[in-house]
Image (cartoon, rainbow, N blue to C red; front, top):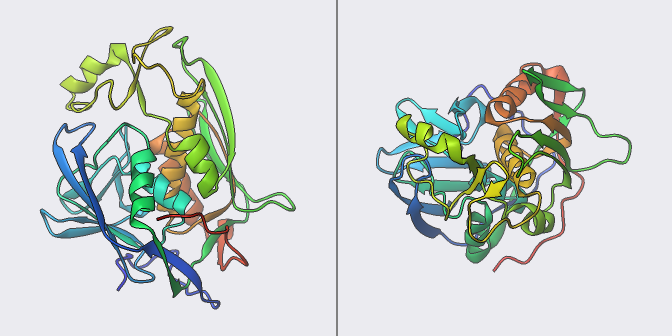
Length: 312
């Protein structure tokens, strides 16, 4: 059974069946929502081939496909919706699922936001690896970028380009710039892979400026935020007693967000991403622009996929 909406740019079937991935067994966890501050129960449930990634609000019994065209809000997180049912802060889980190559999964959640855990994707990756990965037959198209697609806003941009000769997979180059001296200008280049994501990207935490936290809370956001789940920056100072996990943790986390947001393409992207000061809104606009014109992309079955990474 598939929960993909119709019509879908991913609807045409591929002619060559290839291996898809789900989890070996269900696995659950509980935590607090970053913005709502509410307690959340989360469960990752294996799904049949070609289900895709589907969020199930168990308290409302509403299913929402993890798709770019289901995104309803991009203020400080990526939020998808189906009618009145909403699920926010999905980007960290989506990044972990993308890196692990999970194609089919039902994400059960009983609140309008996923748990933030420590503010990174590492806890989600731990759940995936603890449950184990199961292979199943099915068609797994890639979204191959055929020509440059770019969106911009006030000097920030996000762009997808075709691979140069010999290029493969999903290649990401990102730069950021903040006035806070503790961040400044940073850049990072990353070729998406399961092992690379675990080593370089997954543990990078979300961050906030100390001077903005009270305003966020008055706006009903960041109610569950703390030094346990976010890096807090005050000018040249990092307020977290343990400091940073990487000297450039900020750009690594923004790159994590790119991976999670673009996982809402509904299939792996084959091409290059270039971004400068991009965020959830631009990332989503980029996917909407890509799929708005069929000349921008094609769907194809890959010749091979990355070797298995132990997950047990």
